[in-house]
Image (tube, rainbow over all chains, first blue to last red; front, side, top):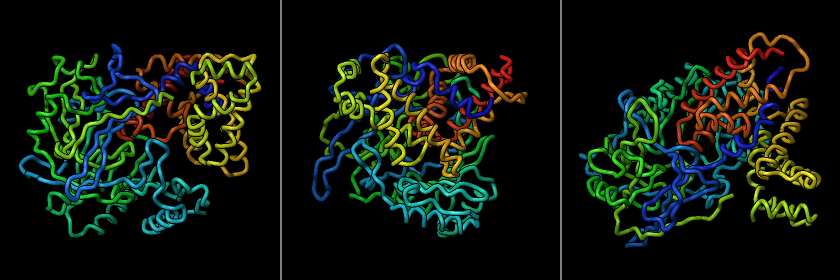
Length: 359
Length: 186
């Protein structure tokens, strides 16, 4: 028996496993007009995309934009007490900073739920991969063809695989060794010599309390709170390691996006009121929070982040609340994330979108 | 259109069956082929071949789950194509990595060449999957059935790549141990 036999045998497993893996997680917005039958299980199972959106109406010089978070995959977004205790969070936002406004960016790769638009051409991707390989002194035999590099340039080198993705927001150095990743970080530090590198650790644990991993995250701090929030959320470097391999991922969501404007934002206390009124977006069900209803005493923490995953139409700031969650059997305390858009309410007109696609 | 209505079109030998299948499941099928082949043109051809195969097979076949039925066909077609390219050194490295990961699951006393009991192996894999919790089971299937990249799985399951990678790593160890325990050697 070899790996191909195993691959082929896997291809013949019962269809229920194949079907189960493609269901996607539904996003819930309390004010949505759409009611779903809530299963007894924590996870919400629908097939196809479900997006939730609100509209920011045009006020003064602010262009009309919309925002959305689409959660995909199984389960809910959240964390647990062990991860919180054992992580070193470097999010520069804090309530005392009294940030009054923050930039909003239009994602130029957004394609209304269809496959992602490309930002860089194949030749540009190849150039970037070549340049990074050269700077890291990596050797390779040949570059991919333009066809192969249409969506991402994957360059196999003697020491690692360099991937440059067409959205322009991510470059990874995969299956690498520590020395090479350190070199990559040194390059970035050189480019940010006027800033101070901040290193955080984000631990992950299973529901049984088994330690799964520690992810290192680096961003470059200038001292200007707005710049630092953007740098942390849009331009972090991630060092991902486990027993199997080491990967460095340089994110830059400012590539492939354009700034729409600096929008006034609400304070944390206002966001909390909205949360308690049910004006949130979450992949978790409120019925499973401790006590069955969100209350002050079960909010363990709040921070401010830009939600950048899932290829949203705009990159916007959200307050993220860590709410105690009791979805099922777990030996450690769990927290689900509940998001409240940080942009001031006067700019938000409410609509809820459901694309009807249950493919 | 509901699957049952599409299948009716196949039974009626209406060519609308083909357009409706492509309309509903084209992107799903294309994604599986792209994961394995990493090439748009080849993936598109696999989608066409898959629908053609379905046209030839239904009837008499009457799939209970059309999506999974078509998914199985395209996974097989795409992997056959991958193998033929591998012989020509035009192979996609993602699938190579995936196969090298599966190597880790092979029992260590796997020294005897030749035929093996595939049906039993499938049964054991299903038994292994059944023991995993739902989320981990789905992650495993996304990786080794749908051949998704770590980034895709990470986005799809809203967890970090590190976490996905760690889960898969432990699953490979568990599968290997399980197969060894069950005496899979040939």
